[in-house]
Image (cartoon, rainbow, N blue to C red; front, side, top):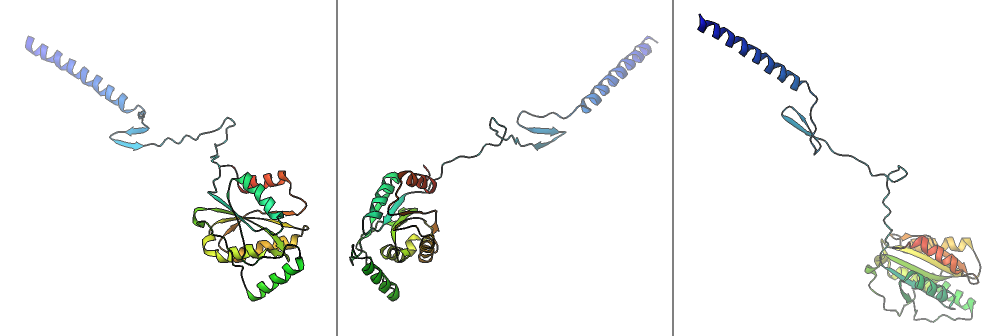
Length: 235
């Protein structure tokens, strides 16, 4: 009888323990899933990766913008000047831009004091599609991404020596940025528009940027600086 009583008491103790263990397990299973410090959410035996998508913001709350400075690569200045007006402008641009520079020299010397003679010769060249033979030894154009081109406006168009440079180097200039500047006796929007069309026709695969067009009497240093800052921003 004593043994029987002890067995009965032991069964009651074991039953109580079993109830407690079962309750503990049920409480644990009902809790929310735990999230690891590495962004991994655990659901039972499976793990699902959670990406952190925090967006960097400025003090004003807007998204930060990449303000990396524009880089147009190495620059070459190519120009033609007959009466030194374009040459003086080119020298200012060269100093401000820090570009390499070359002045075109045609084999046929144009008269410097007779505009009518210049225009007559240019008309013959255009009629016969006769380009100037340039005596310059040009650098390797492939090392330059931006080419500044300067010229006087003759007969309402790009001076022929500069046209000759563009014609003779069309393939080498393809894909490059062409930055034109010109000088003329008086402002003429029609002539300026024609010069852009001519450049585009001679080098159709180039990118022509905003030009600078000045009359012979106006070569403002401030205007040159503003133009350079727009077409060749600081690197």
